[in-house]
Length: 242
Length: 265
Image (cartoon, rainbow over all chains, first blue to last red; front, side):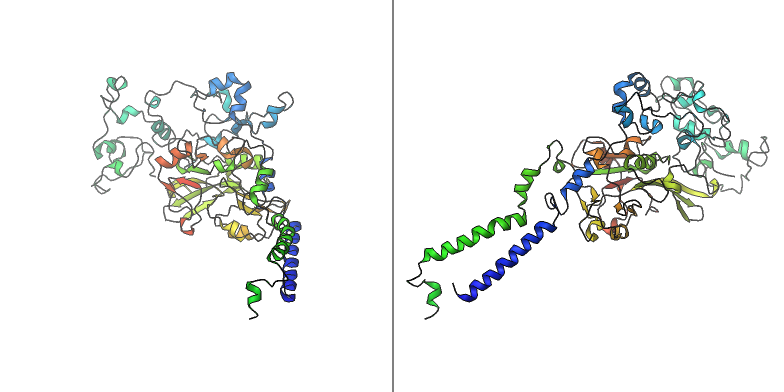
């Protein structure tokens, strides 16, 4: 080996050894194991504590409530939505008890009327709906049902019934507009209720000369968009006009 | 010729000796090289954890049905509980936005305390053209801009497609917060490191759902494995028309929105 190449080799080896040593001390221990990051960071995140136990954990002990809840309208609402994170409770059930909201403040977070909520979602006006009374005094939160037998139509047409309930047409019975043969209840797909077909039908309440309460909005049937039927612009189950 | 020396060794220095010299040097350098480069196969074998969860078998995503969101804010609340997010109304890993498109065509977006305490009505109902809630969170992009800009490699995408932050190596420079087009990151005021949605990674690896999905009362949020063909998420993406947020940025989000309005940014 010539003198030059041996010196060059020495320099190269020193550089490589220096680099490797520096890397050894500077690069984090688990860096690059799974990608361009520290694998230990992922392991640390995996070990973070769990606060929400999940509804399956609740079912292990509270089978009775779960049996009711799983058939009721709130079946998609997990236990911990109302009772809060309960992983600590599953570990020491005697000492840590999850809270239960019993006041009027909590239920309207979902059920208070808000025009932004999807049409048909059951909503009430918290101000006028049985003021002061706690929601749970009439509604079982695990199996909420309306406190009275549901209106006949609403049993099947729930979404329409719930929209109508918060609309200006809330007081109108379904049969006021839909003449419904008795057989519709037995064979609903073979016998259909009637729907209004003319503008004049709406006009019986809303025309200028209609014999109805003066509080009802009036329009001039001749000049008010006479080429369209009323329900082409207004949704009768939740009319928007004022 | 002088050059012949390099081609055929001179008689006084046999070929075997220079080879021996090379092998000797190499035998010293090779272990150091291996140590430095950390041949991943060797280390991976040694460091593999108890192997119950294999990140390579999963690839996570989330579906959000805008038409099902009732704006109750339980997701944002649960997220703060589960992930120890500061309760002050500036820090969110997920939050709910209310979009109100007025009859005049103006769009109003608000998210008071992320929607945790509900939304007070602001605009008279008859002035509203259309209105809806949009839950937001980190989009867990396939090509995440936040990961590109991190100068110390402290934020990264895992093998199962979740973008995480390495708390111990984050230097708090906020580049990632600037780079995120979805405003999904914040600087944790306690640790001064970047903080963001992890898809509740600590829950997911144990087979649990993310906290926001667990508590969503209407099933507006769907979580699942994008590689599975029979998961709730697969069904969600098959039966809905899907949009992602800001698709023109080519971040390829893994949060998929159904029934999304064009006004949503």
